[in-house]
Amino acid sequence: MFEQEKQLRWSKIKVGLVISLAILILFFAVFFSGKIEILFSPKIQLKAQFRDVKGLRKGAPVWIFGTEVGSVQNIDLDPIYGTIVTVSINKSARGLIKKDSTANIMAMGLLGDKYMELTSGSPAAEPVEPGEMIKGMAQVELTEIAATGAMTIEKTADLVKRIDMLVQKIEEGEGTVAKFIMNPSVYDNLEKSTRTLSILLEELRNSRGTLKRMIEDPALYDKLLGAASSIEEFSERLNESTGTLRKLLEDPELYEKLVAASSSIETFSRKLNEESGTLKKLIEDPELYDNLNRVSRNLASILTRLDRGDGVAGTLIRDNEMALDLKETLGKFKELTAEMGQLAEELKLLTKDIKENPKKYFKFSIF
Image (cartoon, rainbow, N blue to C red; front, side):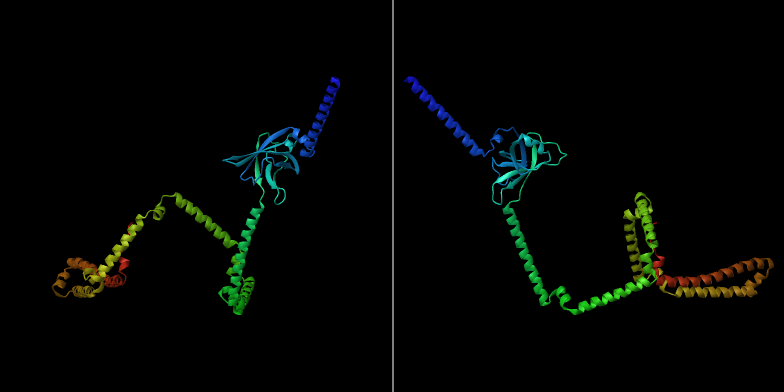
C-alpha cells in the first residue's frame, strides 16, 4: 500500500515537472518569437557618440543592412560628446562594422519607436575592435521638419507680400521699374542706343584706326606688360635702396622745409608788396634807370670831345706817348661806357621782369 502511494506521488511529480518544462519552453518561444538563439549567441560591445539621441531607449534594437544584430545596453551622458550609447551586437556581425562606420538613430515610421542603424563603412577600412567608439548621427525629426517648413512658409508669405507691394507700386507707376515697364520712351531710348551701338561696332569692325588696333594688335599689351615689369623692378630697387629718392618718399623733413620755405617766400612777397623800401623802388621806380641812362650819354659826349683833342684834356692827349696811353685808356673807357649803357638797358628790362615776376628771382632752396 505504501509503495503504491509512493509511486503515485512520484508519477504526479514527474507529470508536474513535464508540464512546468513545457510551459517554460512555450513562454520562451512566445517571448523571443523564434529568436532564442540570439539570446545565447556570443556578443561584443561597441560605443557610439551622439549629441542628441532623439528619445532612443535602452533595449532598442540595433540593425545593420536592415537586419537586427543587437540591442542598446546603456545610454550615458558625457560632458564632451554629449551622449555615449553602449550597444551589444552579435560577434558574427563584427566583420561588417568598420572603423569609419557610423551609427544613425532612425524611427520606425513617422511616429514609431527609435532604433539604431549601423553602416558598414568603407571596404578598405579595418574592422572595429570591441569597446571602440564610432561616430553617431541622428535622423531629422518630423518636428524639426515641421518647424523648418513653418519657417519656410512664413518667409514665403513675407516674400509674397513684398512681391505684392512691388506689383502694386509698379501698377501705380512708382519707381524706375514701373517707368521702364509703362513708359515707352525708355524702350525707344534703348532701341536707339542699341542701333547706335550696332553702328559703332560695325564702324569699328571696318575701321583701321587706333581703337581697332588696340583690340586686335597685342603690341600695346606687350609694351604695357614690359612697362609694368619695369615699374615693378623700379619699385623693388626703390624699396631696397637708400638713396635720395627713397628719402624723398619716406623722410618728411624735406617736405617740412619746403613748406617753411614757401611760407618765407610768401611772407617776403607780401612785405615787398606792402613796403616802400629800396628794393621795391628798384622794381617800380624808373628814376634810377633814367639817371643811369643820362650819365652814360654825358660820359659818351665827354669821351667824344676828348677823342677830338678839344680843351685842356685834348691838349694833354696830344702828347704822343701819353696820347697813346690815354687813347687806349679812353677807348677801353668808351667800350666800358657802351657796356654800361647796355647794362642800363638790361637793368631796365631786369627791373621790369622783377616787378612782373618777383617769385622767379626770389627762390628758397634747401639743397
